[in-house]
Amino acid sequence: MPKRKPKKLKGQEWRHIENKKLVYTVYFVLRLSVVLMLIAQFFNQNYENVLLCVLTLVLFMLPSMFERRLHIDLPDTLEVIILLFIYAAEILGEISDYYIHFPYWDTMLHTMNGFLCAAIGFALVDILNREEKVSLHLSPFFMAVTAFCFSMTIGVLWEFFEFSMDQWLLFDMQKDTVVNTISTVNLDPNHGTAAVVVKGIRDVILVLEDGTQMPLGLGGYLDVGIIDTMKDLFVNFIGAAVFSAIGYFYVQGRGKGGFAQRFIPRFQRKPTAQANPAGDGQPPEKPE
Image (cartoon, rainbow, N blue to C red; front, side, top):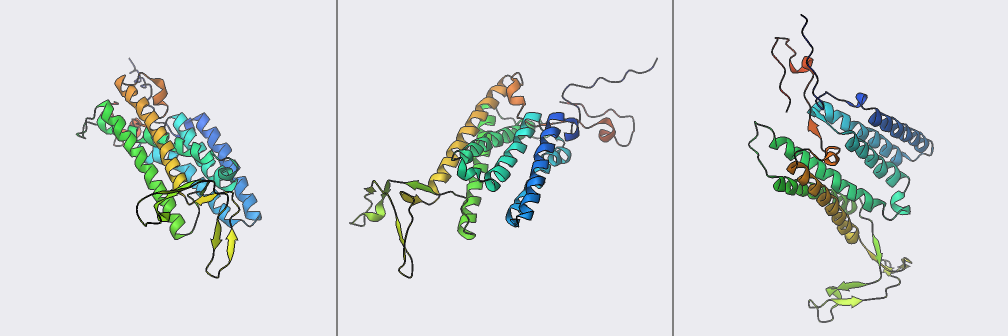
């Protein structure tokens, strides 16, 4: 009597981008759009944007590369959002100037970043928590806290990067904000710590080294980066807190919630040929 083939366990297939029709479609459309943008920027002799397009194409390959190298499966929803996030940040944000035309574009991306980084941090802890070789056994609450801290750390490191680029290369990654009220101890006539509040600011005049005066004409005082940085960290906090709460209830119910599964990467069992390349008849590793 012929042996019956073992039934594949649901969710344990070795999946790559070629098997994900939705991900492949989104990947193809976005990549085609970037290639067309690259050609247009090249003929316009805007070589800085050409480099951004090349960087975007490289970033598009990272999710698939991580799946193969780390033997993990990125849920389709998470992978699509990652691709859209890269496209929205580099192509729409930088090249198409969405950061300028849409004031909340940067805020939306930082909120999404906090959410996604919390999902990735949560997945890392969950994988280690369920790995027998690693002596890590965190409660659902501390898993949520760790995911939250992971996301906030990534957000802080990114703000460090923006600050460094602005200081060393004179970029303006930390977008400035026009304000009409300031409070500073630098204007204290007694040179103490009493904050002096100045309201109703309508313009600021810069006096250069050669005595030239240059009115900014922005309708207020120019805050250099700090408001943008704190706003980015605050919305990152919101995104991280939201997913950490979702992940907490997901672990409490051990996978009953379908929403969190769409964002949490997981290890996948290798195919039999890879799990047992020697063909020695030994059974493959048991799935979790």
